[in-house]
Every structure is written in C-alpha cells, then in structure tokens.
Length: 275
Image 1 (cartoon, rainbow, N blue to C red):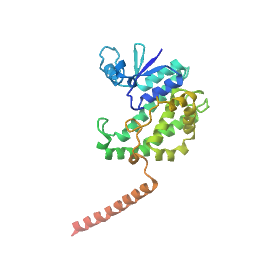
Image 2: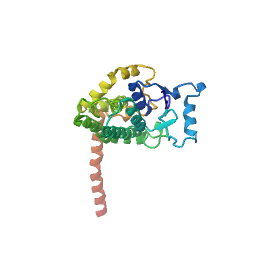
Image 3: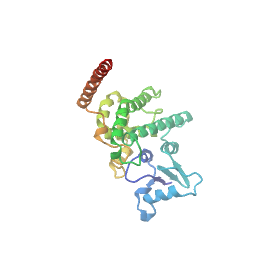
Image 4: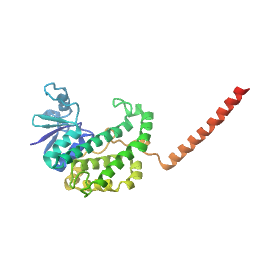
C-alpha cells in the first residue's frame, strides 16, 4: 500500500516527524502537496480534503495520513499507527503506551518552540510581535528548553533495557523524533544548544546514531528532506537565541544600576513629605 501524506510543501514542520518514520520504515508514500496540481495534488488537494464535509471523522489540520479510505490526523496518532504497522514501536501494550506518552510530550515541547517566535498569534508576522517574542524566548531558555531536554536525557538514563534507546532495547519512532528535535534546536538556537549539550551526552549520542542510520542518512541527503527555513517550527532569529555571555553580563549590570537608583528616589520622596 502507498500512503498519502498531506502536509504543507515548503516546510518540514510537524510533518517531518511523520516523514522520518515513513523513511525509516521503507514505506512507499506520496507527499501529496509536493506533487503537481495538474495531477490533482498540490496544496489544492489539502484544501479540498479539509473542506470536504463527507468524512464522518474529519481531520482538523495537517499532518494527515491517508490509508486507503481512512484518514489519520495528529502527529502522535499517525506515529502510533505507523509504529505498530512497521515495527518502529514496541510490541507490548505497556511499551506502546509509553512511546505514545513520550511522543505527546514531544508535541508539548514543539508548541513551546513554535511560540518563541509567535507568542501572540500565528496569524501575525514575526515582525509584528518581536518584543513579545524576545520575552517569550528568554523564559524559554531559562525554563522550558532545559526542563524538556533534561527530561529526555533522564528517560534515556533510567531505561532499564539499556542500549541507548528511548523505549525498550530497539529503535522506535520516538528516537527518530529525538533526532528531529536536536537537529531543529541546533538550527534555531545554536548558542543555547552549544551551552546545554555537554549535559546531554545520551541524547546527543542518540541523535548522532539516528542520523547515521542508512535509510535516514539517505533521506537527509535527498531532495525529499527540505532544509530548515524561516517559515517552519524551528526558525533561527539570532535575537531569540541565548544571549552571548558579554551581552548577558552587560544587561545584568544595567539592571543593578537601575535597582540601585530606586531606594534613592524613595528616600528623596520621603524627605520631601516630611518638609
């Protein structure tokens, strides 16, 4: 069977997590929106599918996987389906649930990553929300980025099966998603990743092993793998990356000077009241 993947043609986005699983499985698939509209495909095919009121279980948004007459949406849901079909998921129920739980955690993390550059609304241009994006990115580097990455490192460390995999003792779609996260974060936030990676030896090693898998390596070198760009989830805006050490130190100095003035103003105000 040839799968039909419906996702936007010019970005990796959430569809890339699905593509990596399809590529590793060696599954035949059509990336519908990248095919010509003259053949009934292209972006027009996505819009037709979303507008179609015929399905009893309509999908909300891409990525969508069409399997025969069945439509499967939501990244984690698609990966759960493919994992069971193509042996990139655990065979036991507990393992499958654990893999799905981890993929849902990836989904949560992806939202935080996206919102560093679109903290107000996805319908606004980045340039319309730069001040808010800077504030959001600062909190992201201080809180969300280390918390999620240290959690994934911990999962690798405590896995009783060993072998350096996220679930059990063999490769699953969750490992493929870890590679995509690391690759995307390195592109979007090179300074932040350079700083935190020494504390993530297992996650870094896993990403390197996935990148070297024959099918994944071939895919990464092919035209099917789109480069990261400024339209997807992972975007590189230097002003949203971790501040360089000098800039951070300079900012702290300015904050201290400002805070030092406040008591003086308060004292002057109190003195004026006494008069």
